Length: 401
Picture 1 (cartoon, rainbow, N blue to C red):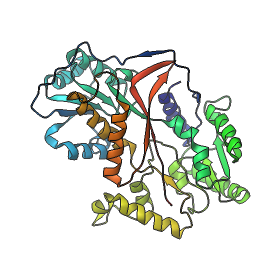
Picture 2 (picture 1 turned 180 degrees about the vertical axis):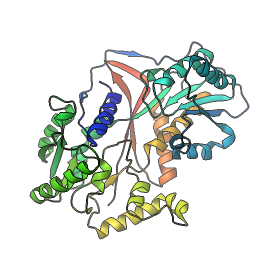
Picture 3 (picture 1 turned 90 degrees about the vertical axis):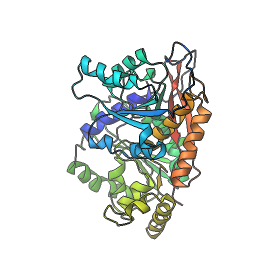
């Protein structure tokens, strides 16, 4: 079962339980018996344009998408004259979609198309566009599509690997106990692969593994806060501060009391991406009303130093980890850079040059944060088939120490 199924299960469970559910996907890598190229083109693309290639963005017409940080950064990097934003029709009749696609296809300067957010409707748009143009590089970076393998590049966080590495990362932060929260009432009839894997890995590396059945108690809002206020303090009293908690909402967990009470190690979740910017806001190191907000918000080294000072005062240095950069920003920026290289023939037309894409990501992380971080990219394997255009990204943690 593929990673997208994991994220779907997480979203469904969050809507019903306001928490992070368990994973029901396979952890073991399958044996590879066959490969297929991504379905892209019928003939080679010619490179002859002297006009700068343009990037098109297909998105929705509400503020949360049109004012996204990644879109702002994309325009800043490539210029407003080279980034064209198309908002998909609200009335998605075949006639409206045909006119929409035709408008994009007729602009021959467009060589890269970013579809964000990806959803069922974009499948048809992508298919229709492919019928008219074979010289565009189509990208999905916020995938919700049922037919995403038709894009040239799909980027997705490698949640399985993050979870797989979770016990060792917890040990690295000083944990001696891992408390695993699970809830069989949200659709699971038996323990998940995540559950089983974490128990086995914890035993292997010497972590005490404690299992807590939420049992449908957490619903939404106040019930979540009430559950945490009643459950976590007794657990910490019993097992101590060198405890890491898995299976509860990242943001609520971060705000549930002092930061010296337990070790904070999040997994990637779409509704709370704990980056230096996020934590600086939540610790009031910067505030939206600050006169110098934009200057401070863009100075990641400053934010990291101030966060360290805060954590040191709260006895939490080395006990909190975050991601150095928002994947929602990193993925579109890196994918656009790669797409432009594709358009000029600097990378292969078929498949993805992982080394090039990885270096692009590393350069962007350094450019935006000043950090020498790391990412690990792998190609999706599903049902013993390699999908060369579908890349899973494993970001490294930034540990404040």
